[in-house]
Length: 232
Ligand SMILES: [Fe+2]
Image (spheres, helix red, strand yellow):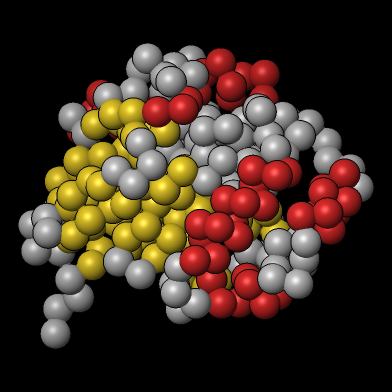
């Protein structure tokens, strides 16, 4: 039987970012999530080879560690760029609200606001998979120390929204630094050392306050560019 769902996971090694292509095999309508400017040619070539009609370029948030390819992909494909309404970007075609649905053929991408890493973080649910951006990472979480980050909000987003999904839901984050490619909601509930079910909000706050993270290398270039959908 032909697989009805299109799914590709792509990697950008400098920022350890995952870009995803998802779609409906019947209509060939597709979306790309978190494309990176450095790998735009690879991604556009793959879309062409797969004969996909790109409808949407989705960003899970305003990234601080790399420049988004969203604006450039829009220019070259005619796809619409989309990000959370909370980000309030003038350059985006669609400003997404919590629960908003986007169609790919007869399949649906559901946007879910999951603030905490940044105020405008969004996760996207599609056909048994949740694309969690930097909200929930595999056995980890995004940092909360800039871009209106909030430990309380991140903990609530994960526990009250993402952990409400069925345990078998596959988790695909925006980054992984340890070689993992995916997880499940059930595994993260059980084994996430920061956010698992055995961790309280106070445990999470303590863990986050003890992280000694360096500032992202590219933040000075990435943030202003990404506020313009990647225009440098
Ligand atoms: Fe991020």
